[in-house]
Length: 395
Image (cartoon, rainbow, N blue to C red; front, side):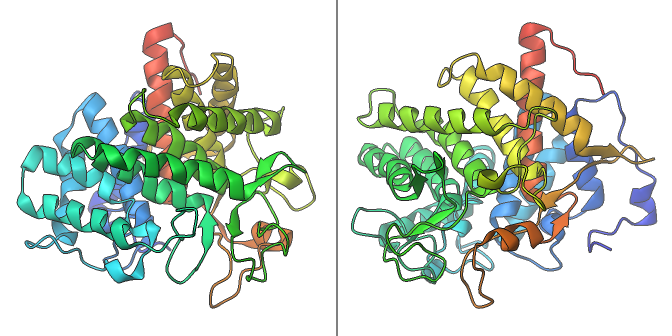
């Protein structure tokens, strides 16, 4: 059983079915994990991208619908993890991990409201990591210090939206070119013309066993990696001025990515497979985290004018498929999202080869933060669309 076990008191709490899906999921998570540091099945304090992902989404719900309990829940994690001097519990700058940057995004909003200096100092600390973060010759950040010369699509989401927002908030106009370069660099290294897809990662040094000897690319296109990449575009673009050189090139790549997503949508369910270049193959499965990430990115991409309005049909079909195939509600009204890949990576101490068998045999679990957060975000986009176009979503 999860360490976010419900007490008898919390078991008595209900989530009402007449609320929007975004609110229902937030309330469900707050009941499952009474302390915000417990999110993503954590037994102890951890400064983790998953906490940032969910809490950012929860603050989006707070901004839209109110309820101070949601804000207080996010604030509790920030207060618990960030010390008075701005240092962060369990954060080691010298690890140079892009994963540790993502949680900085929701801290911007905590600082906006509290004006507490410790939060500003924490933001500055995370931004300073990028000044010294190891890079390849073309300027691409290594995914982590322990993964030299490696570009993972995951890392684009972990680092660049924070980088872009920090630049915007602090008038660091010279940083925009570097932010844009991270997106374009990743596309160059991971794009596979044979499949017309982006692979999970690339070892630019071509030394890793999982990398192709000629291209450095990993073997497969993992759904969630492309989902991270898609979300990174729509979130970073919020902060990059329209006149910035290279922004148009970002939009070209994002439209290319959207075409891939549309092409690979499973016709019957409207969902997407764990391993995209093996869609429908034996052992492959429809996976929730990549599906909600794609839906969110398409919804927002259309709303912001980055994509042709025709992609709205893809997003709607995908969202309805998520509700039908992945969402369940228990007797207390708690909402769960099921069938999420718990984790997938490449290399490491317990070596991950990145072959097909590896991806389809990683653990699958319900209410993984990497599905919960994007589901909340996708639901907010859907709910906004309901107001604009009068679309009604029924179960």
